[in-house]
Image (cartoon, rainbow, N blue to C red):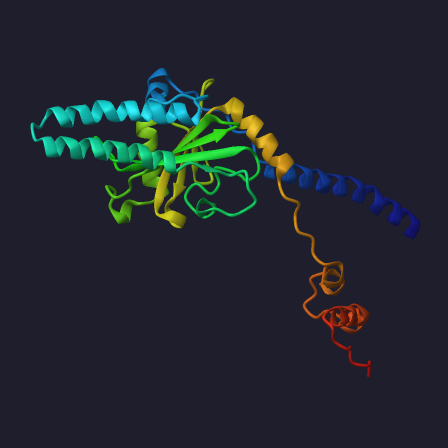
Length: 287
């Protein structure tokens, strides 16, 4: 009788376990992030996004960017010069124009070095890498009521991305949050792909990222970039990435890899002695 009951219990246990496994599998599948649908950018919103080019084009060299910038200044300063008959004021305006061009030229920096730069800790710290044939120009744009900063990023000497730091002074402090940022961006550029403090709009010609940097730099940014060059840049960055630092093998030996609250120090006594010797000390004799 006992044998029959035991077999019966096994018979019922099989399906129960199978159902439990199925539930676990379905739970794991449910945890997997579902692929996001790419948001379609309307013609009107694409035109609004394209204004971020600011008169510049992907593929320009550093000198071509400076030349376009100088031409933009000519148009702006010519109006100011014509608006006055004061010779001294006209000379001052011409000098101001030359200074603006010189400042843009002097802002050029190449990241083909292992040395850190002032930009390694900045609002654009995630926009470049070292030793990957990347470089940058930077300038303030404060005309026409604007108060923003534009960064020009080059790969192999060609412009492929621009990052525009937005002016947040016009937003009251109590409204400087991602919700306000998202509402403002999507009202102007349409719905985008929202993920982890970023909003992305993708087109065949360019991608745009709106980045929330309020917590770290009290700022907001918009990046427009060439998606084809992005693939090449990412590949080079992976290939040239510095090796991850390895933990010293002697130190590894005494780390509690099992995460015990009360590790057995005696079981690691030899490894502890090795660490002491490595530091030039003399281990104490075991009691």
